[in-house]
Length: 132
Length: 266
Image (cartoon, rainbow over the protein chains, first blue to last red):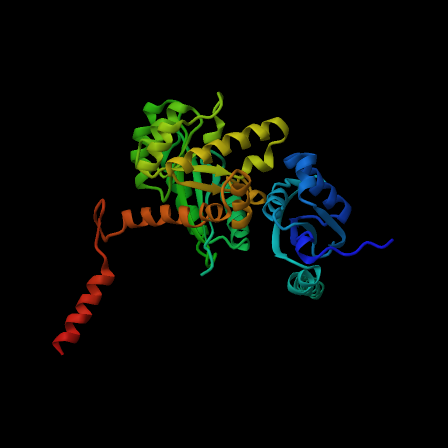
């Protein structure tokens, strides 16, 4: 039996939070995801996190630009933002995580933020290679 | 119009090695500029024993280093640390004249009370650090409203404490915000940063406010409009146009009247 898709008014309203990790080191998606989940669970607890329908999209994490995307309920954006900002260190290195933008679809997250950031990081690397 | 975000409290200790403190201040200013903050204020920790010349020297050096930073406006204030409320008055009188923002490190209820009763104080910091529960009561919140002394809500403990200690800090901050809201006392959310890694953007700071029971517009105001009004108030107080407290020469009106009279005459 196939399930019918829910009518639009009953569907969950998600937001996609695009963030960047500022650090002296580059970290793998798994390490960043673990730090994020630890912070969320410490700050809000199991029940609190379960209310926000949070998901860390590991496949979308770009290790070059150190940017990633987190999916969450539309009412939990500020809570996820606070948890990201509260991460003190990843893999023993001090970090500061900032939200670059919030969108309603993955497509617009890619179009508005991720494509620009990838271009920027590519350009910076090119400049570094040229100067070397 | 886009909001101008203000971080009113970046911490520096005057008694540390000057070169080291300056280097850290430079890195913090660069990070603040990258994070689109419009105004930052360094709170130099001073106590009755701190040499006043050392404070003045560091203040001058920081303002000198801040010149090449473009749009970022850098202010230097003093954060007074005392163990007895009697010592506060003299220090407030002195540092008021030589600082852009005057903060008092609270915690002890007697010091909190002395600070909120003094209208020359701008911000009461570390309110949540009382040894016996919350360090303020409704009387202090009423004074803070009447004297326009803001309570600081720092982001620093959210990053650097864990477990039970963090839950106690967050509970205390939540109570501070609730009392301030009830009596209309100003609240400023700051980073309370000691290094560049503790600096956060305006929206990230506001998210702490929402976590502690503020509405999103109020939380955004506490990192933009409220601290900026404190900066403007102090700037007007030291301006040449200030005739006496509460009386200021408004030049725009004078110029407009002059212009009107010239037009009428012609």
